[in-house]
Amino acid sequence: MCRMIGIISVRPTSLYKYLVEDECSLLIQAEKGKQSDGWGIGYYERGKLRIFKSPRPVYEEKELFINLGQRTVSNIIIAHVRKASNPRNLPKERLISLENTQPFYYENYLFVHNGTIYYPDEVLSVLGEYRSLVKGINDSEVYFALLMKGLEEKGGDFIEAIKFAKEILWKVFNRITKRKHKLPYSSLNTIFSDGKRLYAFSHYLSQSDLKSICYKDSPYFRMVYYYNDKFLVIASEKTNKSDNWKPLEDSNVLIAEVNNDRVEYNIERV
Image (cartoon, rainbow, N blue to C red; front, side):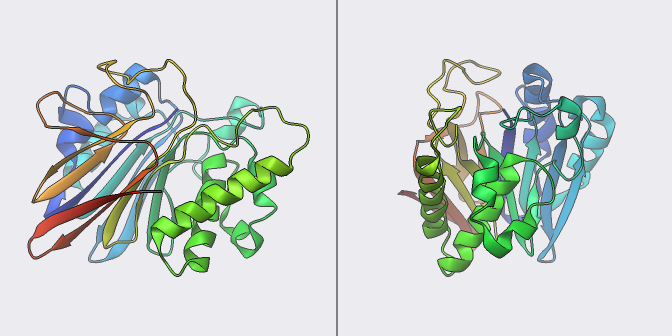
């Protein structure tokens, strides 16, 4: 499965500490967990979305990753390292490409996901015009397109869009008569931005014995966040033991934005 991290800050800042410097940085997580199927960083520059992606293992491009981590300064940054899911049982080489690498984006929306959508082709069939957003064969991209459809139908409300996507995934699953999997997805863990706010959705159905990569002290799918009034970091797992990380529990949505020279956030259950 993938690892991901995002930050929102009062002033343009770097995510470098969490990407590279920490003892369990995103780079270290990729090395330890063999997240070898691509990596990417998305951020906003003067309100416009910028993306860099590579289909190669991040630990084989350390110099590039370190350089980009140092140079990227923004109020919102989201990064992702990929361990490809394969619900269609395709040859490995077909899964690895630039178009299958996260983050995914549309207009000014930025998205990363950790988990597997087990029936992506069936979900594709209900996307309508949003099917055109799916450029590759990554099941996470299908989830992204479904979320974009939900945002339009729900007037841009992220929480309602998440509810919409979850409901559609279950409806599609319940219509399938011959199932290879007992659930529609393993996890819908998401970090998302519209350029003004940072959102994180924690939701997982898989109850495996997998633990966090570095410290082995929390469930693999349980996200965590660290907050002070100048910035908030949300991650798949903590990158150090010194910060006061808090869990984002299952079925919770975190919404953060900058107001009056401070980051403010709230958490809602869906």
